[in-house]
Length: 165
Image (cartoon, rainbow, N blue to C red; front, side):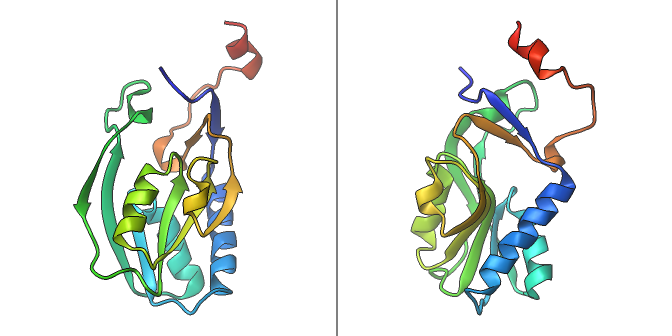
């Protein structure tokens, strides 16, 4: 059963604007040693933060949590957490960045690994929000965020037609 009843498509322009807003908030809290991006969702926001904040040191923590199938809603189901690559240290002085925090499962795992890192996301849902130090936009738990790197342009059925089925 799909727990997401709402769709929230995000354009490249909107993502860039929100990542810049995140960088403004984070600059006030620095100085920072570097950024640790949670792959894959945190890679694009991390690149924008690095540019806007003039940070040159970037690393990744590679965690798989959502399905990788490309058919239907399979990618919307969160599975077991698998850490493919970690980061040394406790995260002190680093920004840990991801595109969003959803249930908080991935966030809790990386928080346990890097307890002194400052965790920042662009989007936060209620279940995961307590694990994030800084975020820009809150969305409801039943909303699936569609990031620009996951979409292609195609016909969109009007919302009224979707509800009449």
